[in-house]
Image 1 (spheres, rainbow, N blue to C red):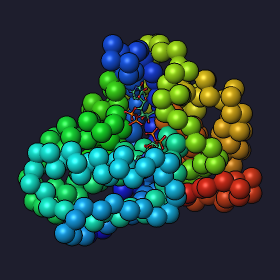
Image 2 (image 1 turned 30 degrees about the vertical axis):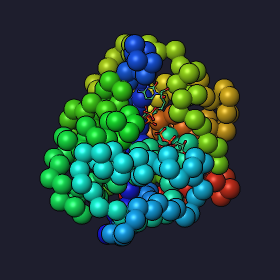
Image 3 (image 1 turned 45 degrees about the vertical axis):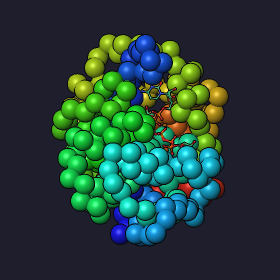
Length: 268
Ligand SMILES: C[C@](O)(CO)[C@H](O)COP(=O)(O)OP(=O)(O)OC[C@H]1O[C@@H](n2ccc(N)nc2=O)[C@H](O)[C@@H]1O
Ligand SMILES: Nc1ncnc2c1ncn2[C@@H]1O[C@H](COP(=O)(O)OP(=O)(O)OP(=O)(O)O)[C@@H](O)[C@H]1O
């Protein structure tokens, strides 16, 4: 069985406060994007995990696909499988690529072995693997609060728009990015700003990580400005970086400046 774990962008990201458990409460809109990895499951007589494509820095035993398998194995009589991940989505990119692999592994095992887990139950397992993971169970636009794993409905429909993702060959660790943040309660909740037309977002909707990361990595702000110069209606860094995206009304003529980077273009 093959699945295609995709990625997300954050439209707005406000880091509201530090929690007693060391994590941060946030406000964000998570929006699914079609750039994805390829994950294959084959029943086997022993469990194996392998990967190809982009190198993944940690050892294979700590891969989020393996952790997802072990999590369900602890509660269900799962047979051994061969899992193979072809890694395409960049790592340390703010796109939740590893989180998607984890959630798609849970869903794949649930479907293949008819475990009967509901979306709510899968989300509960996903939360144990990382803050971004639960989003990928349903993988639809949502408004997020708390650690980024509590969801409510929001009417943000960008179908018809085009997106350009630019990964500037620079991996940013999520934990380090959070360490540089001074949390604060936004004056206007992000939820209200998201309901206004997209052409208002440039002056209202922000990602709080930009303030702390742009001075350290000026290339990120340069890319954002280049996306606006190329006609983006809205441009921002995603998550804790380093990917910067632009949303466009029409298919994009790729600016030459991005030829040295990993880019993905598609419809939202
Ligand atoms: C930046 C975002 O991508 C926005 O969607 C997420 O908040 C990051 O989620 P994630 O990569 O799944 O993060 P996790 O694997 O849960 O946590 C990695 C590290 O990020 C920090 N972290 C993460 C999420 C959160 N709400 N507060 C935090 O402070 C913690 O130091 C944690 O040890
Ligand atoms: N399947 C996987 N794909 C990518 N990274 C993985 C995977 N399994 C474990 N990891 C580890 O997770 C970390 C990066 O995770 P991820 O790709 O979600 O980060 P990110 O792109 O910065 O996204 P975000 O910050 O939005 O969660 C790295 O330390 C990496 O080694």
